[in-house]
Image (cartoon, rainbow, N blue to C red):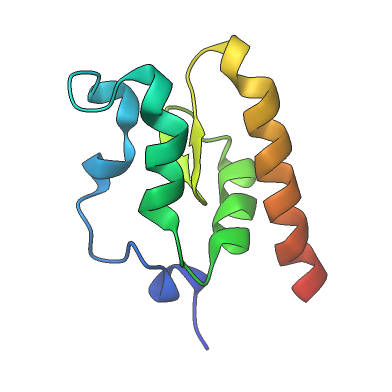
Length: 93
């Protein structure tokens, strides 16, 4: 079936769409969680994407429908959401 990223809904998209911290004028901080969810809605590889985000310790980007903020105050609920999604990828193996 190939690498999971080849099946991602965002494949071929402009990656800057997923860096919300660099777009404060377009996506206010209080809307980022909703925008992140919408960007990845329906993606068949959200769990694999979450696992990859954990592996690479991504910050400041949208991964698996979750905005991973730069600030520690935002990281606790984000880390929990990413870990839960990543667990689904591990269950499939």
